[in-house]
Length: 346
View (cartoon, rainbow, N blue to C red):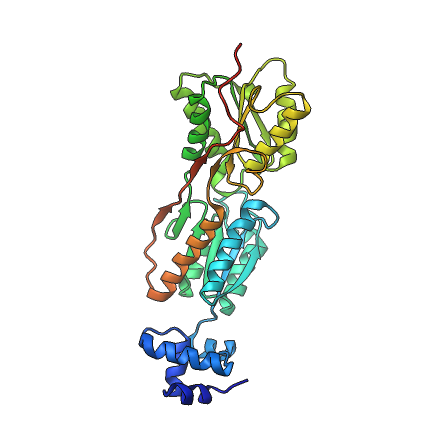
């Protein structure tokens, strides 16, 4: 491998300038940085990660902590974050922690969470932390701040931390209002199971948005039209079988709290001999990769963009040293397809 001295000679600068240029220091002019980068590329020079870390105090590594690894939403957020970090020359370290069942209970009761903040992060393995759909308590936030490491949250508000999230109440209202606007009056909701009330209480927020939209339309909410399930195709399938098999209710539309649940609802309706949307309209939330295949009307929450936005914010804080906390509302959009239509005539 080429030595830094060779790069300095080819670029016509000092070795210190080479180090600063390849570390992205603002003290190096753009022209000089370009000359150094071209020389390094020509000679095949790669900065030693350990040497760079010792010199700058930075690892060029960002940690991401998430409560789940095997669901579509989290994988898309991680994909967006990983691509953004790779483009910026950073590595990613992934930590999997269970969601805190009670945000008022200290992380002292969770040894994995305690070890993450008291041991792993104190070893300076990462320059910053992104928490995806995890409520951090004040001690965890202060632990990161004491180390001078930026923290960015995705999925809900965190006191004293810059956060990014969609408005789950508003997104559910938009889905329900879409069905109301088509003329539906008997709208069921497949919500998250009470046992699935993870941090930030996403299922409860979406239920509240659904119920508020019904109330504003003059529609009385029927508890029998509310079914709980996990956020999977199987969960949506089972909940829809129970709903459509109940002789006490006759829904003409279903609003599912996730696209996978909505896909399960479509499959269940078809197995019961119902046509979507002529017999039953279905709408979901996510913008799932399979939504177009099932012609599913959905509220796209741009999951991959959420990961990219979080990384952009982390890199800005690392570059400027500013940690002024703000809350950034993330975009969402109704994508109409063929799974929704006006209700069938009586």
